[in-house]
Image 1 (cartoon, rainbow, N blue to C red):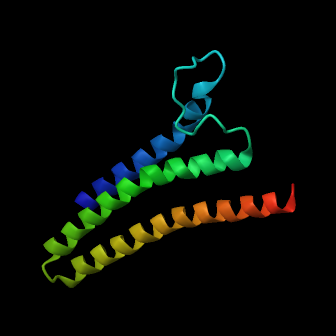
Image 2 (tube, rainbow, N blue to C red):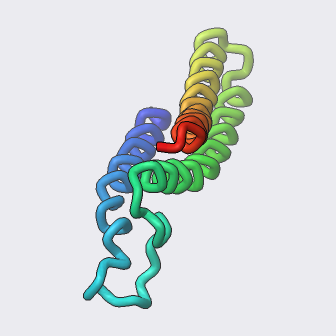
Image 3 (cartoon, rainbow, N blue to C red):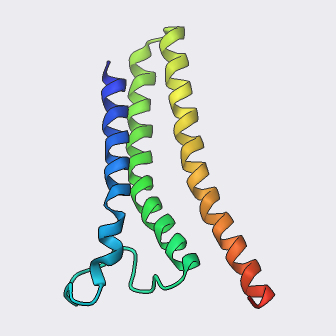
Length: 123
């Protein structure tokens, strides 16, 4: 029951942060005000830089969420008390938490590889 609530909160926070990205992108648009702070950076002129900035923001959000999820999963391991079903759930949750974080790190690596390849080709 608690796990379902935790994952619903996690999913809602992720969806809300993705929906808020356009507001962050246009925060430094002319006429909005120069004192506003754009978390994606002021250099979002190219698609490559835009994607890189989005992945940086996602990683800045994902790192603390992953740390909190691992701590919460640690409590699952402790409260399982040797129950094979509960231990299995905790192991699966830990596995998929780390897989999700690895996917984000892989996305950052892929963007870096693609941008260096395109830059190396002189395009």
